[in-house]
Length: 297
Image (cartoon, rainbow, N blue to C red; front, side):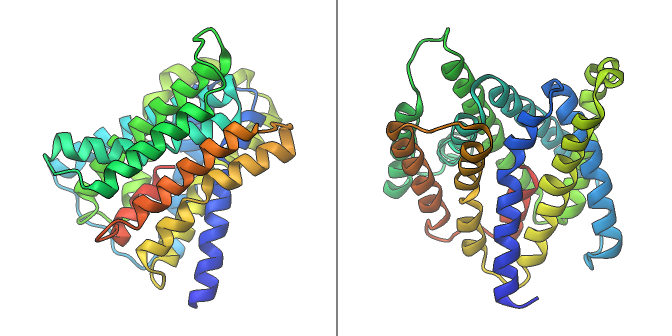
C-alpha cells in the first residue's frame, strides 16, 4: 500500500465511521438489538480480516489481559448503546457532535486518574469543546428531545474516553484486531440477554442496516485503519479520524434533512477543531493507540 492509497483508505474508513449514526437511525430496532447485531457482524468481519488479510501474530493472553478486555468490552457496549439512544432521540448530527466531546474527557480523566499535569494547550481543548457543546445545544430544557439526546451523546463520549484509556493500557501487548474482536465478543454477550427476546421481531430491512453497520462501519473501517497505519503517520491518521463528525453531519443533512443551524455549525466547528488540536498535541498518539480508538467506534 502506497502513502496515497493509504490516505485514501483512511478517508474511506472515516466515512464508514461517519455512517454509524446513519445506519443506526435507518434501523427501526432498539439500541440494544442494534448494538448486539453490530457486534456480532463485526466479529465475523474482523475474523475474516485476521484470517486472510492480517500478518500480525496474535498474542497469548494472560489473566490481566482478559480482565482489561472484559472491562473494555463492557465500556464499549455502554458507549454504543448510549450513542444509538442519542441518535434515536436527537438525530445523527447532535449525537455525533455530542460524542465528539471525548477528547476533552480524555484530557480530564488522564489528569485525574494518572495525575498528569494538564498543559495549557489541553486546557484550550477542554474550553473549545465546552463552548462547542453549549452552542450545539438548541436549548437547556431537559424535556426537549434534543437536549436529552445530547446528554446521552456526551455520556457516550465519556464512556469512549474511559475506553480509550483502557485500550491504551493494553495496546502495547495486544494487536488491535485481536483486541477489537475480543471486545466485540464481550459486547455481543452483554447485549444478548436484552436483545434475544426482540430478535424475532426485527425486520429483514433492519437486519440489512445492522449488518452494514457491523461489517463496514466496524470491521472493514477498523481494518482499513490498521492497514493504513503501516505507511501513514499516527498524527495524520488521528486528523483524518477527526473528519468523522463532518461526514456524519453531512450525510444526516443529505439523507434525513437534518438542517443544522448556524449556531450548531459554529459549535460543531469548535468541537472538530478541538479534536484536531488534540491529535496534534506534543508527542502525538501512537499508531496502536489510534488503531485502538478506531476499533472502538
